[in-house]
Length: 347
Image 1 (cartoon, helix red, strand yellow):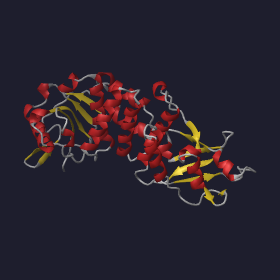
Image 2 (tube, rainbow, N blue to C red):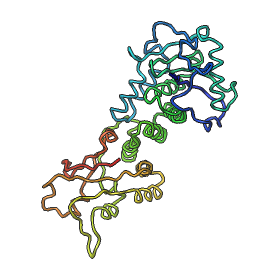
Image 3 (cartoon, rainbow, N blue to C red):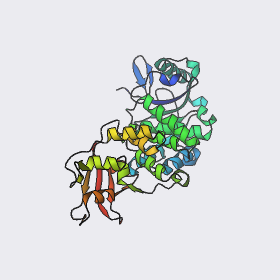
Image 4 (cartoon, rainbow, N blue to C red):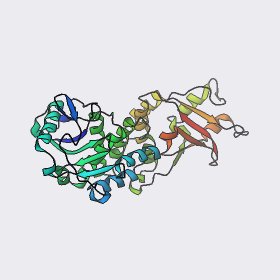
């Protein structure tokens, strides 16, 4: 059986990131056609794994993940892959315990896979997804704390998805390192959320944080990711967009009971993003709608009373929570902040 080992490497050429992607979470050592585990590759480790605070960069990484505006299920998966436990271990490898021939073999394989010179490859960590062990090589301890956190995140991602491609992992690692360096820069946060969203198949991840930052810009400084409430018309690109989708035009605008059909906002939001190139909300929404995600609206019975439909619809608000990527829905509120239904997305 072929056993693959995820290996984290650093490149000294800016062009390397366009190299061939490595399938199935990295590479392994091979001799006469057989792939080797840590033991058969002559990589020996201490019996006792490193404790949490003995792994440099791990505290910073954990702190950054805890503070990120992620739904609980995604945050939980990431932290489980990061945090040392009985099942998840980190080991330090000293130079005398890492056979030089085995190291050279790994470097040679990755140089070949990535089409670069062996002199431009440095191996910092090795992770075996099956055993959930990460081996930290001597070079890892020479990095600064932010670089170490980025490497550890890279390694943890192999455990989140052992079938990931090298290209996916390195894209997230780069975005994460930029965010770790400037945690109050909105664009850095949204880029890492976008990359993570693609990786875990939850493309809505950057959408709600982008909306929160648009309406509450200090949230990233104050770390306030509590739900935000916005006029529903804004979500439809303004009042005209709301009328276009929820009402019928004739001699007068006539708004009907909602909504036995799916609403496709792609064209409206793309135009809004082009018209408002610095609006984080429309830009993130436009990215989300690169794939078709129509919406529908479910309003509770007997909540409108005597209010005309058009006035009623224009008085609605959406409450948006960072848990939305898990539920694929937003809460509908009326002007008195009463829950009157839900707006939900289709995959």
